[in-house]
Image: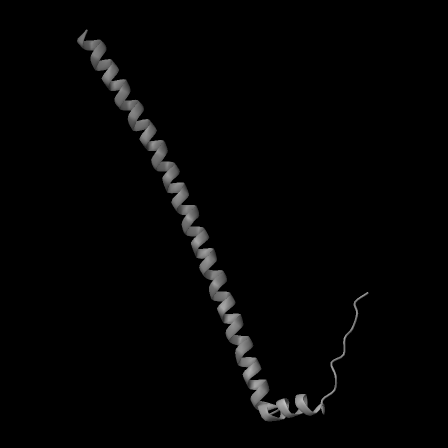
Length: 90
């Protein structure tokens, strides 16, 4: 009788440890995927911020270098500038 109880306790303990091991493996896999997705999102946000910073730098240099901001506003108000041209794609 004692042997049967010990065998039942041993198999229950082994089953419990086996199930816990599987759950820890799944948890580890989910954690790795989560970290990878966070790194990808962070890289995308950083890349987008770099692009926005570059666009801002280019527009500021273009506005400061070619035409003063007052000239842009006076040409728009008085109609001295050329109207925009629109092209239709085939």
